[in-house]
Each structure stands twice: as structure tokens, then as C-alpha cells.
Length: 80
Image (tube, rainbow, N blue to C red; front, top):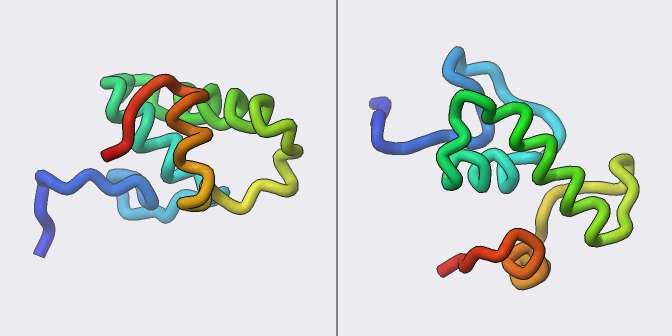
């Protein structure tokens, strides 16, 4: 059963699974109400995170729970 109140950050509206472990950044873009430009905003948040962490894109495996505090500081928001 599909629940329209649940927003998926791991697949698109057509059911195709996203690639690249960017669900954290999609959720962040959606949270900031950037739905019309969700893909563009997702990439911008991702690139900002990589710069902040001084990380290369090929080394990115996702945002681990241990780095949520860093993400909060980088994007100035609170995860509860």
C-alpha cells in the first residue's frame, strides 16, 4: 500500500531508484521546499558537503550517522 504522506528520497515519482547515495541531500532539498529544482538543489548540497569534508566524489559512500553533526553545521539546521 502506498502512502502519499511519505516522501521517498531513494526513488523518483516513477519508481526508478536513484543512484549515488544522495538521499540525505534530496531530503534536505525537499525540506527547504526546493521541490521544482530538487535535482539541482540536491547536487548543490552534495557539492557543498564534499567541499566542507574535503572529499572527492568517487570516495563518497553516503552520509553516516557519525557525521550528522557535521552536516548540521554545514547546512545550519538541526536534526532531531
